[in-house]
Image 1 (cartoon, rainbow, N blue to C red):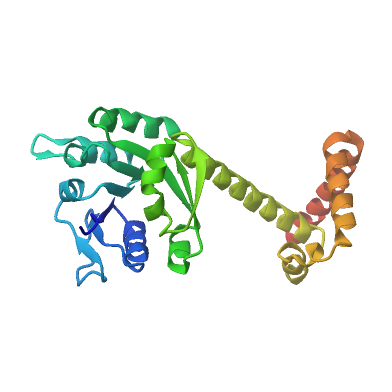
Image 2 (image 1 turned 90 degrees about the vertical axis):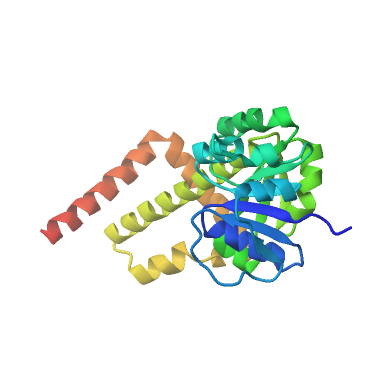
Length: 260
């Protein structure tokens, strides 16, 4: 018997990118993208669903790419005019939530589907849409281990599967990764501003701040340790910190005066 198709529902291009990546492996995909106006013939192994409920009826595993929690809840429950996706999914089916939402909202969705015996997993793509196109991504996934087991083969068609723990843990881990990335970006921009104020050229900063050459050889471990030691001293020694702040502030003032 031919296996049931993998269902994918979404509201943006990420759902289409995921469908194309999975279909390229030979897996049959039933796709519904709300408001899709792309038209044309879908890629091989992809069939467009007329409604989300068609996906619920035909698919045991469904990937959801819907960030709006209220919209996803309405999709699962339905309206007085139509049944929801959750009403059509069979007991034992698994919904994998790739949306971006707080863990508590993800856990609340389990209350919507759990009474019907439908499991929910939360998942996050590390690499984004460009990563899907390049096939170089990881998939963070959280939820009950038995449910992850059921969906893992399909998740692996997108990238390397990394189990993060209970339901909500994948979204939490993804948010923390984003926090670190944002903090790194802010620190980089601040370092660039200070560098310009202290007379470093754009070429020098690009070479120093963006290059990994200082980490290339074992000998540079000593240099790295010294930098780490200096950073620790700056953080704990108020005298050293004050000297650096005063020096930087004086140079920034001179630059500002020169621009007037």
